[in-house]
Length: 144
Image (cartoon, rainbow, N blue to C red; front, side, top):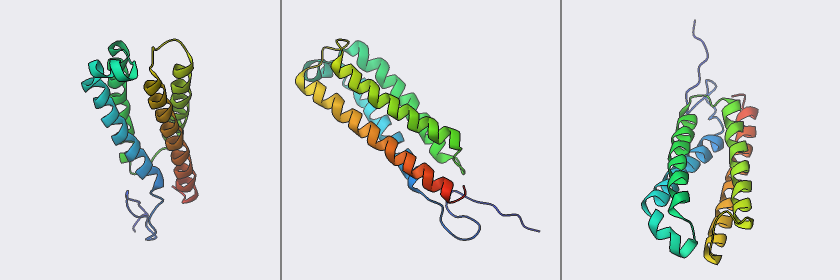
């Protein structure tokens, strides 16, 4: 007797599972990795044009590397657990709000360009969260 199984690519019935969630998680992982490396490698350079002190860019960069690894692991599961997908969505929403709060607070001496840069990042993070949530809903609708 054979039992139904599902790989990361195809369900038993031959239908491809919704790949939006996995794709957006992978994009999120890679973009988070690239930006974390950018913050670490360019930390001293970012102080001038953005007003982002190295005391902020290094810890944020390190945290982003850890986040990228976690996102990559989640995206690699054969079946993405709902609680992890929703945790990513919530984390991105909170991250977007935190970025906006950083631009309106006096915590960072951001330049005008730095403020625009951080706000643009906030928009990207929130759009990513929305796409991940849409992908999660499709993933669940596919019965995964």
